[in-house]
Image 1 (cartoon, rainbow, N blue to C red):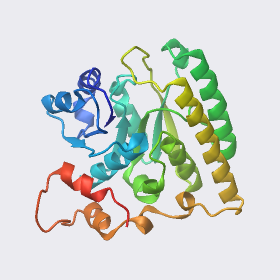
Image 2 (cartoon, rainbow, N blue to C red):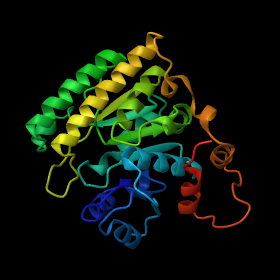
Image 3 (cartoon, one colour):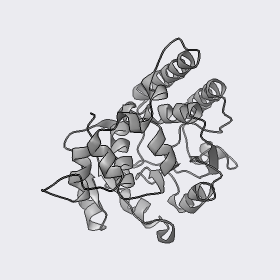
Image 4 (cartoon, helix red, strand yellow):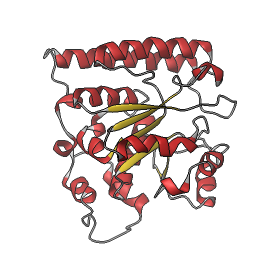
Length: 275
């Protein structure tokens, strides 16, 4: 769970997670200004605390590295703001476990009424539809939604795409979809109801406009790379090619530090560095 100011919702999100479908729950706090860390600790959750704010994408990078260092075969990214229905985790991971998909998205648009029934503002609905349609055309996909914050990834997928080169901002998610399309991974979707309420995280309108423009920028970069007009490293490299020796040892579960702290939090903080 990539967390930022989620103190009021993280417990409700955690309580809904089906324990028989999850081996480990990791919280990465991106320097929250509320009691997110204390609340997560009270729930007995392992918490990695960034030393400085790294942004939404930067938070996910730590989440995925830590999960893979712990040997995860399937990694589920769930916002701790209680907006997505975490009881759907078993349905999210099933296609990956059956070998039918490498990536599964929890879509707000597959169920009757979709996101509007869950309270999504109309302007967000229109923007989501426009961007998703544009991405589907550019990436050659047929997704009902490209902008969900509830996702499941196979270990193979995360060990292939060079996600460490992706943006530290919200457009990280769009880059992941573009990489999935470029590397030919199978994507599936599961209908997931959502909730919009005061405590749920929401990107302000101005920030949403920047995100929309950044998304279109990723589409442009993808097309330029496919047309061989630009060599873009987020599409031309694989994760193994950009990892430092420290990263490689950690992901092979080999010793990383000869001495000093061995807890997950310290390990992840030391490992989120490029060669």
